[in-house]
Length: 223
Image 1: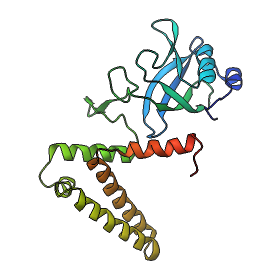
Image 2 (image 1 turned 180 degrees about the vertical axis):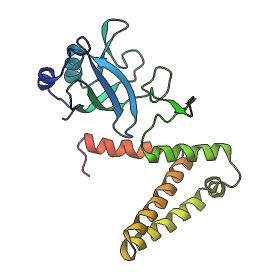
Image 3 (image 1 turned 60 degrees about the vertical axis):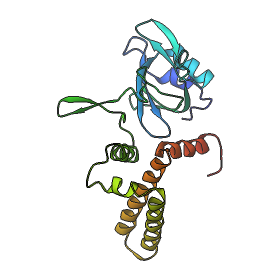
């Protein structure tokens, strides 16, 4: 259901607050990128305040009180949509994250990648494959490894990258008109890669474009 002005009545009547002693888990997900931001808990009061204000409220188990996310940091979470799970005992909120979600200064609380039994800190916190591609591009631009196509192209400057974008756009258009679906998908992937590289060279991110799309979607702009 929509999170903008949603009514908590139906949720209060159907959610099972008894399993965890009056609480339900609440997962916050960034509406623009699809990244999981944090997991916290809600009681009925927190859910009601969230519905009334449009800002995420949680119940602090350690402090034993209601808290507004961002009340001290200014890093608020604006509700854009809310979903209950199939067992009606947990919630997922799509939110517009102001600033960062994690108290350690990371965008997502899930910033430690577990790989081969080791916890490796990552800025990613999951997210879409485009977000992961962006992180790889940023790493290539930072480390400048030999043999890297990304760095070799970027080192020639923005104009060279833009020329490549024009080439990829032509090849994508040609594929759409005359070639197979497989070739269309391949050329679309090439185009998205080079667009992501261009944004990086301008100091922008794919998330900036995603947030603009989310703004249009949830603020009533025409699409």
